[in-house]
Image (cartoon, rainbow, N blue to C red):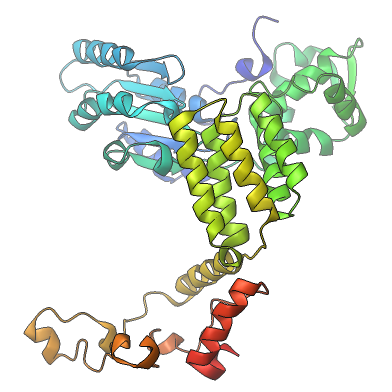
Amino acid sequence: MSEPLAERLRPRTLDDYIGQKHLVGEGAVLRKMIDAGRISSFILWGPPGVGKTTLAQIIAHRLQTPFYTLSAVTSGVKDVRDVIERAQKGRFFNEASPILFIDEIHRFSKSQQDSLLGAVEKGVVTLIGATTENPSFEVIRPLLSRCQLYVLKSLDKDDLLELLNRAITQDIYLKERKIALQETGAILRYSGGDARKLLNILELVVESSTSDEVTITDSIVEQCLQQNPLAYDKDGEMHYDIISAFIKSLRGSDPDAALYWMARMIEGGEDPQFIARRMVISASEDIGLANPNALLLANAAFDTVMKIGWPEARIALAEAAVYLATSPKSNSAYLGIDRALALVRQTGNQPVPLHLRNAPTSLMKDLGYSDGYKYPHDYPGHFTPQQYMPDALQNERLWQAQHSPSEEKLYERMVNYWGERFK
């Protein structure tokens, strides 16, 4: 076989593209732009194997425009400028801008990203970036402001089953084998919503069979992966499974397991910033007000990683991991903001009470803006009761204290301030 199965099955048209209906389904935002024949620069953010590169290639083919590709891992500022110069020279008047696709754009340095700004702003190229990392952390603000952001989702069970059936019935090699999908639980579970991983597992299972008749079962899949655990994950060691185990070990207060999974990531060549960023999230989500210092230490570890890199950064990461794992836990802030978001979606744009509104003009003062507002610092203990929620929501409770020494002190203060409202 000259090409891997995932490459042989790469879709060439939107009709063959599986998943991401919220972006490319009938009437969806990207589909409309593509059908109109004009697209603006955008960044695709999503986990591996969900079709970011494929979507960019389909768009270029559909628009019949020159398509340039750069990898952030191997390209420098000179490569970026060379591509922009070629795009500028090769473009005809009124023709659609050439597409510049940058895979793993989160790995581009600030100077590399800066070198794109002028070309993107002037329309010399239409930028399509692909990233597995949150662009707000990794893409400079000026570039992000010039691009739309589209979030791609992991493929769901139906998408993956459709892909499996397409592989065994349409692939030039697999359709010659008699392949039966007797059980699909294991292959779907190990793929983790990643199409490329799913096809790599399927190919591994089929190639391991000496017979033309292949029956896919959970036990056969598990057996093949135990014999060759890296075969279906080219980036090393079940990337998202390992980070999930790491975060759950921190949440579960097991410092030994946290260090073990961190070591697995380090040995697998994981980006230290990726590990540090996940610990910042964990400090907010899982420890929160039970120990606010956890967020400070996690941020300090992140800064240290940025300054010193490997191998010394492993020490700062380990210190933070042990501290987070051994800290008391609370997710009250995490739950509180989710309740608040749900309430906002449910109740819409409630008006701000007049006494809380700013009154920079005399007209606003005449209308009652800021009238009756009590400045807390003018009162004993820097507190006085007054309404801060919208009128229709003034009895809603969003933050619920949890049982940890530091958080119970906060709760007691709220009871002293607000009385029955917090009991």
